[in-house]
Image (tube, rainbow, N blue to C red; front, side, top):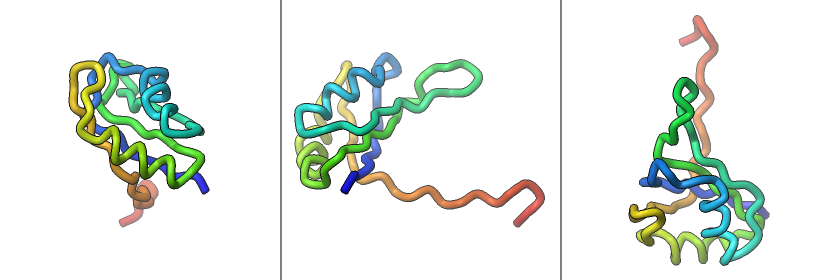
Amino acid sequence: MAKKLYVGNLSYSTTEETLSSQFAQFGDVVSAVVIKDRATGQSKGFGFVEMADEAAADKAIESLSGKEVDGRKIRVNVAEERKPRPHFGER
């Protein structure tokens, strides 16, 4: 079963390709996304990687958390589910 990981403290120059290649050494990467500002297109310094296998994801967390990527020590952990946002006008 796939497992989604949060990757924080990314350099603004880190690309999705770099992220994917870092995690691919531990197993199949389903997706790798660097979150960007809508207005400027600049990285917000974090992203998400979805790994196909839970064991590979756990190994990636263990190996990559604290590792330097593009000059910054990244933080890797299991992504938390996003809480639903209320619709406009709801509270």
